[in-house]
Amino acid sequence: TRKYLSTTHKDLSTSAWKTIQDLWKEHPKKLILCGQHQDENIVSLLSTWTKKYHIPILADIISQGHQIPEAITDTEDLFPELNKSLIPDLILNLGGHFLSKPMKNFWRKYPPKVQLVVSPRNEDIFQCLSHSIPTSSKSFLAKGLKNLKHQPKPNEITYYQNWIQKAKEFQTQKKKFLKTLNKGFLHATNLVMNALPQDSYLHLANSMSVRYACQVGLAEGQKRVQVFANRGVGGIDGCLSSAVGMALGIPDKIHSLIIGDMAFFYDRNGLWHQHIPHNLRIILLNDHGGGIFKIIASTQDLPERDEYFVTQQSLSAQNTCLDLGIEYFRSSPSSPKDISKYLLELFDPSTHPKLLEIDSLVP
Image (cartoon, one colour):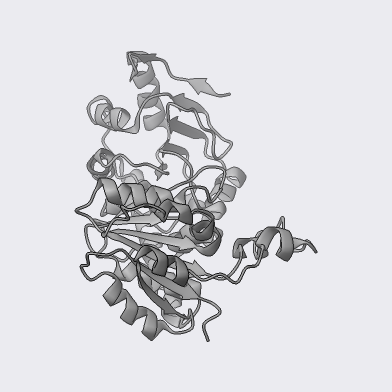
C-alpha cells in the first residue's frame, strides 16, 4: 500500500523521519537510484551519503551523478546479467525518469520490499512505490545527514562492496567491448564522448542520441562535464533550440549537442537568427531516418515502418551550415580516423559555431 509521509512547510515531519529511521534499520540491503536531475548541489550530498552509510548509488547519465566518484553509471546493460543477491530490500529513488529500459524492467520484475520516492511529483516509475516523500532531493539529503542516526553494519558494508565489485567487473567488460568497435554510430558516439572538453556542457537529443550516450557513458576523466537532455514522452521537439539557448545564456562554456537527423532537421529553425553562439558544437548523427523504429519491438515488424515511422530522408546539414555561417565537417561512421581528426578541430576555440555531420551516406 502506498504511503505518503507527511510534510511541514515542505520539510518532512518528525513522525515521517521516524518512519524512515525504522525502515533504514529494518532493511540492510539499500540502494540509491539517481534519475534525471539538474541540481548540482545534490552531488556533494550524495557523495557524503554513500561514504557515511555505505550505500551504492546508481546514477543515470542525465542525473549529473557521474560527478560522484563512487557512483555506478552503467545503468543500461548491467541489469540483464545482475546477480539476484544484489537485489535490494530498500530503494531510495531521487530525481525524475531513467533512460535504461533494462533497469526499469528489472525493478518491475524484482521489486524491492520498500521504495522511497523523493519527488514533489510523486512519480511511480518502477511501479513499486511504497512511500512517497513529497520534497526536494536536496532538502531530503541534507536533513537525512542530521536525522538518520545509523551506523552501517558489516552486512550492509559487504552489500555495498559487492555492488562496487560487480560494477568494476562490468566496466572492464564494457571497455573491452568498446575496443572491439571500429565503425558505426555507437563507436562514433564513443569517440565524441571521449573528446569532450573538460568542464563543458553536453546536450543530448532524444531518441537514439541519448541512448548511444547512455550506453557508452562518459570517460573517466570527464567528471566535470555536465549533461542535459530534453526528456518527456520521448519527442524530438526543441532539442536543438534548448542547446542554442543554453549556449547563449552561458557563453563561457563549450556546449556540445549530440543529435540525430530527425531531431536536427525538425528543429533547425532554432538556428534561424543572428545570434548563433560561437561556443556551440553540434555533432549530427545522420542515418537518414528515425533508426530507433527499426529496433523497438512495437514498430520493427510493421510493413509501413520505413515510410511512416522511420520516414527515410536524404538531407544533409551542409547547406544549413553554409546559409548560417556554421563551420562544417563531414565524415562517415565507418571512418573513425577522420572523425577523431575532425573532433580535434571541432573543439578548437573559434569565433564561429561548428558542426560535425557523421553521415551514413558518405562512403
